[in-house]
Amino acid sequence: MKEYKLESLVYYSKLTLDKEHILKSSSKDIQAKLDEYSSEGWRLVSTDVEDFGLGMYFYLYFERDKN
Image (cartoon, rainbow, N blue to C red; front, side, top):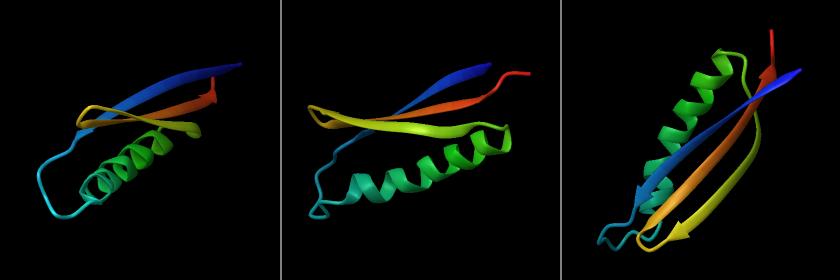
């Protein structure tokens, strides 16, 4: 049997000439979440990204075998 977990991360746009600033700032946080969950036995099975207004919403879907 599997158990599932959803992690949501939100990043907001700011005034800058760097059009990739959200990507740069989110990459470290997302990698930290991946490392954290993998150390607890979770596997990343899917991702999704939505933009709404000035924000970008990253959804990370994890699963692991239930003990």
